[in-house]
Image 1 (cartoon, protein in one colour):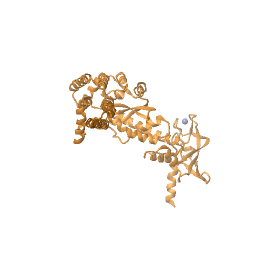
Image 2: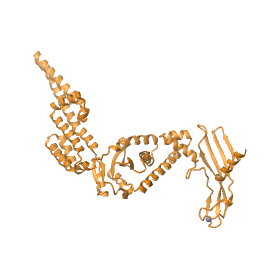
Image 3: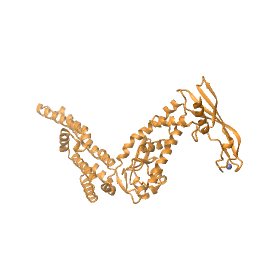
Image 4: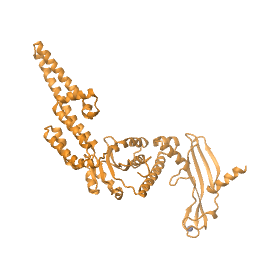
Length: 446
Ligand SMILES: [Zn+2]
């Protein structure tokens, strides 16, 4: 069979190892294929001096894990290879093993299998079970190819001269209530540039120390939640960059601390009133008065329920309410003046965030804060007092209408990363996974 001989010859030239034995242990379901080097010493070039004057100095063997043919089976390749010494420069070196992944005792094809399974977002534990590899090995392979991908991506961006102009920072929960992490995103590419443990000011300082700041000297604005202390570090390390406070964080806080609080307070008033009226029921003899009293109690109870149920209607944009929803809301607002004021202030806040003129935004916000102060509503006054200090970053939104909203989208990627890395408390791996997931499928040059 000349064709087969021809194939074998080609193989021999690029992979100078010959299979010499095969064993299978039915007890452990382990197969071992052994290969011996048939490389000619005269063909070996010294990698240190480049001369071809070496001799075999030692013989070694190594066992590397391969992908099994059948589930639950294990398969290894054992290579018997040469250690050489150079007669010219005296250096020792090893004969290369072609099927092996550098820095790991695993074959290239097994590593490819692992990569393939992981790229389908399969959890590390499942990949370890299917392939029979230790999860540490699976994780190492994964980290290796993700690091390589991210390094290439960074190089590409470097070469293209690309520099980010808009950034956002936000925190996310790793274990709700226990540990948090912060991440910085390039808002134009959607890429996560950095992930770090914690959400405090000193945790975030690591970003400025770890990241190549020269890559960031083009950043015009940085979006963030005004409640975190990220702003001080941006002022310190990126003095030319404008801080933009995130509208969604602010609106959410307003919804909870002002609208929610005032609404529940008004609801409580109905409840108190109803309870007071109930006490009178026993003291009234006159049938007509009693009926009137009961009606009043019903009204108060209804007022209470209506307010309790109005959470969404109060928070949502008036434009998004149905006609009947709008009417119901109007009825509530007409009979609760504090709530009506806070509601109007919410709508005005939304309008201010739509402004694209710096001056208009400045005067608009000034008016808003003044109105809040004069409202006499404690929750609104307190909110305004805290936020007026952030005026500059609110006005900056008119010039740079950016937000941390895009970072919310990465929550899905974080969920995927959590599922893949589930159970392995390796934060470095988890953080690399998040950055990798955010960089997948992005255009080379934005
Ligand atoms: Zn040499």
